[in-house]
Image (tube, helix red, strand yellow):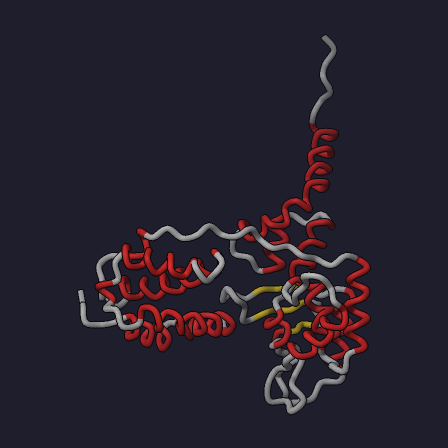
Length: 293
């Protein structure tokens, strides 16, 4: 056991050697959390970080943050302490194993009605932001995350095979997503007007980076005033439409790239009528009516 190293030392090593192995969006999110970890725990020796001290820290976070955010901080610290135990051998036991984490908040599902969908797409076309409409269309048709679409590269687009082959995703694995309807149409249009030697499907005007649509999205939403709607809800919309179209939870998870069906289960209430129909067809085909006495 090495007692002289602090949490700051551990954070520095983790950010340098281990964090770069995660997806770019995860790296950005984690670095944001590290500011609080350094401020609250940075000077504490790793060996002095007892479960009691961590419970006190957890309770202090509860005063300012929602349970989901508290879990994010604890999970971030947990990953770092795992390295301290398994890779660096600075401590013998993981102190967070004895700290109860807040329950996960209920999964948020906000999806567009047919009328809202029409309003949103019309508003996208009226904005002076050429990338906004195709990006939103792709989000609705594929359920991809904003960063996956915004940073999409031509090497990930298979127009002939009519699919996306995403190389960098949030969970670090590759994913194949089918392209149909307007999603395929907008990508073909982008391909026809693409600039050579620029890898991004939706490049910035100078071609040096992927486009940033956040400002255009905010301005459009201020005009539209869709209640309680965020860009990420386009992903929820795609998943909800899949469920209502009869897709199974496993199929929805595959399209969205969920590693666990627990995440996908937030859409299970849309499957009720479909599930009933499946059972009814099974009964008609294989089960006998009650025999006469």
